[in-house]
Length: 306
Image 1: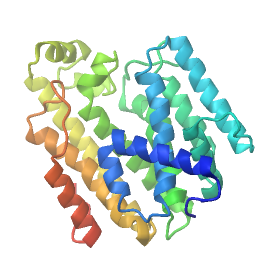
Image 2: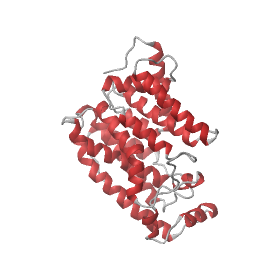
Image 3: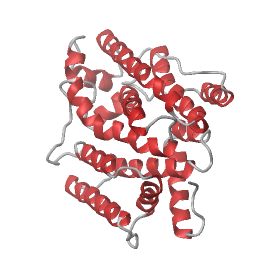
């Protein structure tokens, strides 16, 4: 199901999505380079759509009401494009609508994603800046992360019935997102949000005020370190639950997904290795290690281990 070449506008839309992935999602883009060429445009389109919506929520200078209206416009454009009218549709929506149609992805996964993104918008009816429990956080992550895994599955293809692979795909999406939350604690605080569950933090004597104090003063606290170590252990458990799903994927895409699995799990290693510095800086996997992970996945010399 490669990228059609007959429509220059659609081709340009897919190129734009590829540029978004290359610029904003370095580990993600590196992993997609291991996917078969015919599947990469669709994966870039899915990333581009998610990134565009995320930018409306987190980086736009518009008022919350204006951002909420923009999300509504994106949803309306997507519905119109899926109905065959892409005349006034932005590039990223045009590309993702084509991907949804060609790979027969359930549009409900995109509705779930947009609902979760509205939960990130101050002033929106269901806005949440904090989450009291892991259960509450996972309700949000159903749309923000599990839905992404479910969007990807028809593109990647499976050697089993799609429904059989869906639980692992959803769990892997959540595992990736929790890794992002652990990596981005400081940046999320600056946006007025704490995605780590309050009750699990409280078990270690940590609350939002302590996190902010550590962020503002540039200091670490052993209570925060212990809480982060606990949540990293939870995150690794999710990766282990998701791991059997890799064998359910089509052989042609396994190297790329193993690389993505390993690259994201490696972020947890770097957080621990650096002494849990996530309130002071953004932790990244060193370029040399990223290259080694990709090379090992490509040659089949390394299987997931978390």
